[in-house]
Amino acid sequence: MIDLDLFVIGTGPAGQRAAIQAAKLGKRVGICDRREVVGGVCVNTGTIPSKTFREALLYLTGYLQRPIYGESYTLKEDLEMGDLLFRCQHVVQQQIHVIRQQMRRNGVTILSGTASFRNPHEVEVRGHRRATRVRSKYFVIATGSEPAAPAGVAVDGSTVVTADEILNLESLPRSMTVVGAGVIGLEYASMFGALDTEITIIDKRQRPLEFVDSEIIDSLLYQMRNKNCVFRLGEEVESIHLRNGGAEAWLKSGKRIRSEVLFYSIGRVGATASLNLEAADLESDHRGRIPVGVTFQTQQHHIYAVGDVIGFPALASTSMEQGRMAACHAFDVPCESIPELFPYGIYSIPEMSMVGNTEEELTRNRVPYEVGTARYREIARGVILGDDSGLLKILFHRDTRKILGVHIIGTGAAELIHIGQAVFALNGTIDYFVDTVFNYPTFAECYKVAGLDGFNKVGPPKTSPFG
Image 1 (cartoon, rainbow, N blue to C red):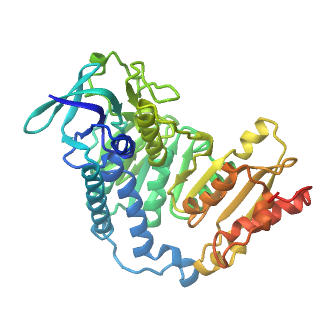
Image 2 (image 1 turned 135 degrees about the vertical axis):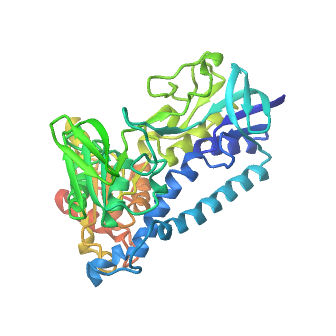
Image 3 (image 1 turned 180 degrees about the horizontal axis):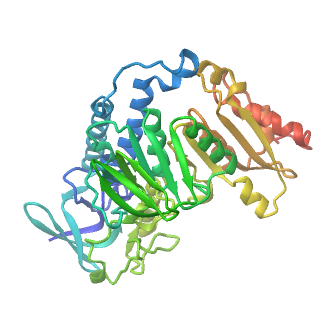
């Protein structure tokens, strides 16, 4: 039996931050993972491999250089999956090493095995060699999520795949059907489209990613359609059939879509099946998610749940913050976080990022707003790098001039968003961007151009933005 102050179930981003935060407070902390390695889905099969895969394909295909050197430009002919995954393997191993060293440096006890509750204050971690019982004052459940599986057909890792298997394909498919136009579906669809795979995307919604500003998502769909992607929106898959080494999706409308590979990406479910939640007097919903309050406490106030296992937004960045806040709350350490200021990054090709309100939300809430826009084709850095389709838009209040939202699509969007996020968090106005000097030539100059565009629509301020 091990006695601890905090025990964390899951070593993904949420679990890591919870464990390290508690360890920094001088607490006795343990953490476990059902894998033999740390990092959870994020490091081993999700965020890190997929984003590394994206960088590898952009580099080896010369994709970003084609507007300058022509559509046939490439750094390597006859690309294979092995070429793209070489970089992924290197980055994953490096990240596993960093996380394990960080845990050891802070005195966190690491256990390998599947955890299940014996009662509200005790879990058993069953590994390959032995089982260990852990008693703790507090628990953090950070088990993450796993892909929802299609009904009526087995996921075989070659013809029918989910996000956990797609990067294990032995060869690049010539055609792929993507069922589900969520974040993961669109990210992989755009990646394989850039590798010249013929992509068909099926989704029952008329518009994917409804939380994204409509102008931004319209731009993404336009660019994906120009890169081997066909969208079947407002359609629903009735059944999936295997046919002669391929997969065939039968739609309720009567259409049949055939491809070498079918990528099933209809959401994710919380990885809670093995936790024996009943023994802790806890329950999950029909998708395995655990309900929590604003402080991430479950029905049992000494048990917290964070990350993908509690549902939206299910991002690595937000999960990290949730883990930190849960540990702080458990040990009465003041902390503050404002979810309204969280940025979102979607690593499609091109990438998108946003913070704050969308135009649709402001219109619905009858907020008088104006828009300042900058297009990459007007920015020297955009011309230098060959990105002529990028867009940055700043939404601001017509009267107070305060920033209400920033939305970007194009090269470096997920990095660039943090400038707007900082000004937004500090209640800055559109005039800050007008009166601030940015390095030239950089994409940050988009903020200056968008600021001037917005300034020209509402006129000069009554007072200086610097007081």
